[in-house]
Structures are given as structure tokens and as C-alpha cells.
Image (cartoon, rainbow, N blue to C red; front, side):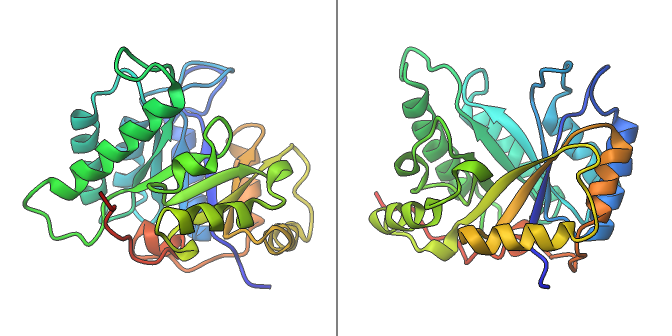
Length: 263
């Protein structure tokens, strides 16, 4: 059965979370399995997370075949500084990085979190397009969670959309329509289903179950959130159907070339 693009969610930090060394073990297994990207949390209920951009740079230097997606809240991070930092990471990884833009409380300019996210995302992508001295065809991959954000807000700018598997029914049709209204095609955006994997849930046929879920809901891949420590996460990764390493993160998610934003 054909393998699917996989995004692996991790939280790295102090007690209760994976350590940097443990994250390195997971990243090595992910690289061997051809995992598309590792999503790195900026916060976690079980402990204090390290700066995900710093963790991404650390892991990318040791396991460059995997993509890295630090989570970035839309407040407390000036867009220009964030754009430069993320673009530097994308350049250093050869196009294997991006950002999960997390909606947070607004500011005096845009009090609504969704409006703040929309404005921030547009500014971020336009900054990437405007920076000189660059011969990349595209900027970093922008990932959005379908939850607080409606499809209409993320359709104009997101490259990857993540939806909880329980809410995945019909998501493809809604996303397709919203992209059409935004002047984009469905192939420009990857739709991933988020799947929480409990300890002991990895059994023979696990990879086939993932493929079945993807086919059932017309998804393009999955985001796996594995419970437990490094050994548990590695066990999940090793149960996947291996994929060849992709040259860039956009290629790993099988995205069509990005188009310039209108307006």
C-alpha cells in the first residue's frame, strides 16, 4: 500500500517533555523513515517547551533529511524579525523548513485572534517574497490548524492545513471551495488529518490504517501525535511505511508550486 506524507508532532524541553537528546533520537528515526516534517511545539501542558526555532536549528544540523516546523504565536513576535529568522532557517535547511502559525490574543491593531492571524500571515508571506538576494522559488511552508481559524481565513495563505481526524469528514470539499474563492487550486495545499496515537496502539497493519483514513477523508497525509517518551514515539515512526527523502519540504508534502498572492 502506498505510503503517505507524515508530519510528527513533538514537544521538546524540560521535565515531562522530550529532552534535546531524545528529540535527536526521534529525528534520526524520522529521517530513516522518510517523515516529511517534525512539528515543534512552543508550549505544552506537561512542561516548559524550549524555543522551537532553536530546537529546529539544532536538529536540522544533525538530521537534515527531515523538515522542521516550529510553532510561532502571532503575538510577541514582530513579523519582520520572525520572517528573517524563519527564512534563515529555510535557507540553511535547503528548503526543508516552515512555520506553524498559531493564533493568539490580538493587539491594539487587531484585537480579534483570527483577524490578527490573517494579517500576520499575509505580512509574513509578503516579507518572504520581498527579501532580496534570494534565488529560492518559494518561501518557507506555512502551516495552519483548522480549529479556531475558519477555512476562509487560512485558504489564501496556508500551504498545509491540519484538521483533527474526528472533524475530517467533508473538510476536503470545504477547503477546495474556499481555495477556489481565493484564486487557488486544491493541489497547492496539503490537508493533513491529526491522529493521536496512544501507547500500545501501534499494532501490525498500523500503516495500512493510516492509508485507509487518508483515502476515506480525501486527505493528503497525517499528523501524528504519539503519547509517551522517545521510545514510544520511535516505535510509532518505525511502524510507518518508509518514504524516500524529498529534496524540499514542499516536495515532501507533494505541493504544487506556490502562486503569488493577489492584491
